[in-house]
Length: 440
Ligand SMILES: [Zn+2]
Ligand SMILES: [Zn+2]
Image 1 (cartoon, rainbow, N blue to C red):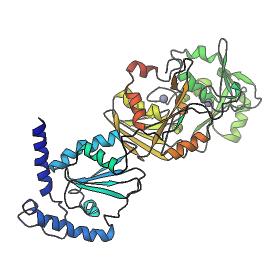
Image 2 (image 1 turned 60 degrees about the vertical axis):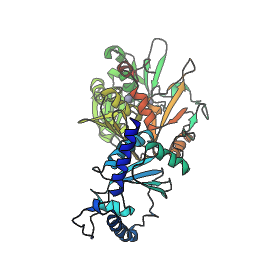
Image 3 (image 1 turned 180 degrees about the vertical axis):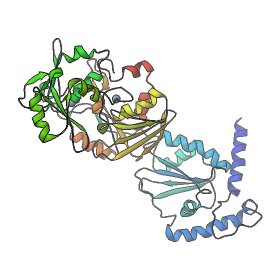
Image 4 (image 1 turned 30 degrees about the horizontal axis):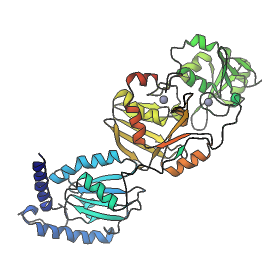
């Protein structure tokens, strides 16, 4: 087996040696074909590389990347190139966030091949994180050899991301009084929009009716009528609590198109306010149906599209209420997904594509995930909930984001890890995801 595999590789290498780069340029190919005259072919490739050098000198070419990068120049019909393809795919998946891998088909795109000044395919070029070319290899290059070469170049891809941010203890404990903190999002409670749910022994405070509806959508088997009777909202005019189902609401929109909700105990007061502020006057039932209209495609929680990640799968365009939930859509529907998220600090776009439950691509490749966690009563680390998760284009942004959240605990993980955490969930676990008292 092994010997035959080796022979195959040797045969492939032989093909590689004679596989001249078919750069379509001024040089007219002889009728004999490149395969019959390797020296001539090598020469012909050398000539255009000299012309290309003036435009983009291959040796000093820099690649705008903050990660080390491996570029494989080949063609989909060349045998050793075909053998490289699964290796490149594996490297791309296994080292997502640590190594950028790019394949350039120089037969389909000869200009790209010329820019690198290559003479044979496949050729692999190794760039360090600064974009400086460090090494070039011609012919088939095995996965272990590639990893060994990176190590030799001082880039240890096998090393755990030791520099990952871990925060097990809050930098500063959260000293806000509990009745000033939203039960759902942990945000400050605005006294103008405070929403209260009276339980049997305790009451839960929400920053707004919106957070109440997120809470409602996290309840298992809740009867809306029973739940309604427990909810009070703050009258916009007097600041007093009034029964939610009897109140009238102005449903407006902020500058970003995100809904705003004001509650009124008296319809007249609402009508007066509406004259100056605009918006629609709604009863509680209509407000509920609006609030519950858009759900997280993973955990089914109510979510505003303006706050959500976009998740595309098949012909569906759905939403993930948080970055981690958006990856969970791949697990729930067993489909390849495309996630459009935003950096938690700057809002910069982060795109993630999956293939067969694994990461296919991350853009930018430096993007990482924050897994917000807290210790439960048994001292185990558990998810701190959807509002404590995020993606960041780099660790710098994560650190700045954490600086502004001294009470936050958790750890930095790769986006590949965040996806893997979701992919291992059973359908039963997915059904319980983010449900109050059910989710782990
Ligand atoms: Zn809230
Ligand atoms: Zn969700």
